[in-house]
Image (cartoon, rainbow, N blue to C red; front, side, top):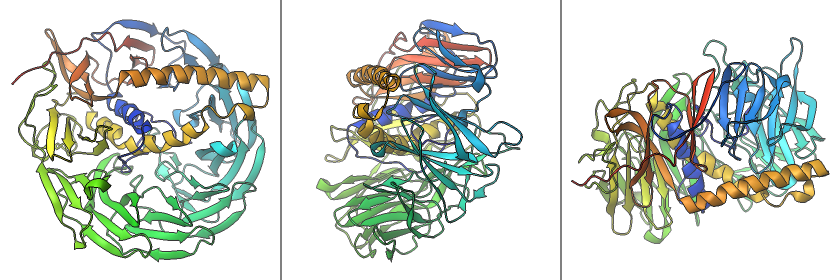
Amino acid sequence: MSARLLPRKRDARAAGALQGGEPWWVGLAFLLCSLLLCLVMSQAALGSSLWTHKPAGDIKWYRVTDVGSLLVGSKGALYALDGETGREVWSRADLAGAEEYEVESIAGTPLVFVSDTSGTFRKGTKLYALDLLSGQNIWETEKLKGAAVAVEPVYEKDLVLLVTVENNSANKAKPHLTALRMTTGELVWEADYPDSVDLYGIERKSRFFPKFDLSGSNPPIYDGDSVYFTYAGLHRYSLEDGRLLWGTKYDVTEGAIKRGNAQARIVGDTVYTSAKGQLRAIDRQTGAVRWVSKDFGGAIAEMKLDGDVLYSRLGGAFYDFSKREYVNKKPFGVAAVDAKTGGTLWYYDKADDSITNMAILPDLKTVLVADAKSLIGLDTTSGGKVKESYKVKLEFKNNLGAAATAAKVAKFGFGGLSAIGKGGGDDRDEPVALYRRENGTVVVAGKQHLLAFDPRSRQIVWSVKYEAPGVPGWQKVAMAGLTALAYTSATASAASTYYGTSENRWANGQRVKSLADYEKFVSKRYSATKAEGNFVYVLTTVKEGKEKGAGIVGIRMDTGRGERQILFKDKEPDYQVDELSGRVFNLRNPKELSAFSLDAAPAPEEKKN
């Protein structure tokens, strides 16, 4: 079950789909997904302890919600804890044993969906819609056919679309679509999907008894009256009655990798899609294919339209479920095609060993990417063989903002590292994400490196390198955080269109109160975020006094200065951060969940060269 709304630990759904240069809310999105870097850490040795919770039954999983509470799944109950005090807010013993992938929060609403497929002979799913703040049922239904593999909210229509399959233990199935009224659970329509679709392994399930969902595909897109699904091609359904208006079938699956295709885009009467190295322009009214681009030979995980030019990024870092790790998929480059004809305007395939997302800089007539060794500015006025406007080596030339207790700045690029950390996997630290700041700089992020680049002056403003921590699996966690950027950015926009405009849709007093209480919590938390500013959290080796070990350093993105840090001791922790409230949580073992104050952690001193 995959709502695709909030980033979660060990969730690889967003791999390969990075975006840049977006509106203000992307700053918040980048902040939130950067926190995923910190999810396998440990209990704070420094910083004040807030509370420790010792449950009656073993904890299986936990999650920080968008109101700052903790949602906890245990053998004895599904329950919520107050993030500040650790007090139990509500508990549902009837939902004991719910798996993490069966519980989804719907951003912008007080709804938590819990799917129940228990029962030897049950072929459907019972769906509960809970109030996040009280745990009470807002509504429930048994009208779902099969197991839920995707949950897609349509805020403007007060709908939630549930995609189910008869058997989620197989990696291919023919889905069924169910549209429910989001606020009441009323059945609006049902429809069968015309084609079988590929499903993707849920990493949080057992290797020997895997479950599958649609986490490796992109969420649907919407116009005023229709929804467009990109499973096994492109299919348009009426949001009013569920009629299939048209379907265009083509292969979309890039092997076992997740998010190997870019999110579809609607521009006027055209829907642009990518699949298996090709771009398509499809008529929005009829489903007729207007053009298909040449085969660029690899995954196209990002598309951006500027005027009549469609830019596409080729290759990148993706999560491969068959290998249970992130892989780099070639070719690495950028293609520009004519949005009206599909003809190739120019093509660049000289990126070295990796590639980040694109930053489109129209005023500078440049597309900016980074590979394993350089920041590369591509001249958008070129034709055929694209011209590199500039190539800036990724070197760390200064020590601005480097935390003396945790970081050392090195004078070599990302691609030159060796033996950077323990725990296996790729030893190098290629850049993974670009992020455009409001001040015009572009922050380049790798697993252990950060730098800020000014495209106008073509100068590196600040740069830092952090020692890799000696905890198992740190590389995988760091990659998950970096590749979550676009996923969070895209869904934050959808949620914001619903937030604050939905009072008239909540039909009775209880629902109105649920929404009002929820919006009060969210408003308070997100106004605090604006005042706090944007941080990137890096998992590294931290030294505090005579103690040294794995920890986190918070780096302010405007300055590159490390302003906060916490030292941890656990070697294999289960750790999450709520930056909005300055709290850190750690599941030390199934019987002990603790909270610590991030704000109480000392800010490291700045080291001068």
